[in-house]
Length: 188
Image (cartoon, rainbow, N blue to C red; front, side, top):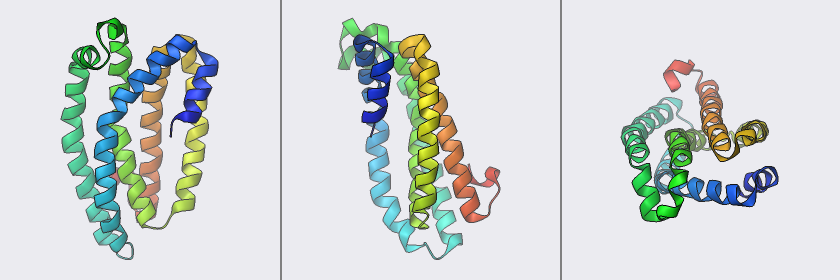
């Protein structure tokens, strides 16, 4: 849910800038949301069946992450390359000034879907409290990054979101790593 962060951003930048950010963010989240929801509905029940078998669960997670990356990496590149056309089709030519913001936000896409994979495996292992603690810390980091980014208006906030996505993926990967007693290189 992005309501809280949008409220915070709305306190930092003008309403027109918030509208630009909100529209570009919504476009960026569409592909990841659909794929993430599908993966969550398919992967989580399967992972939950393996929650007592770390070897199977970890293998399933790694295969799922490989699958996600195989789809999302080229998709992300295509979305970045065709951001101008996407803005033109969805928002119209008066919004073409938002193309850079959208390209920056599309950098988040691969990480956002991978984070959902990490979250699914963490929930399957029953580590909901550790995940909640991690998400709380990440929310604080996001607030600081957005505050710093707002000095550069919408593009600064988009960069803050991209940096946050990387940090959030890293922290979720560390949580997965610790839950399976693996090295970080084995998890990501």
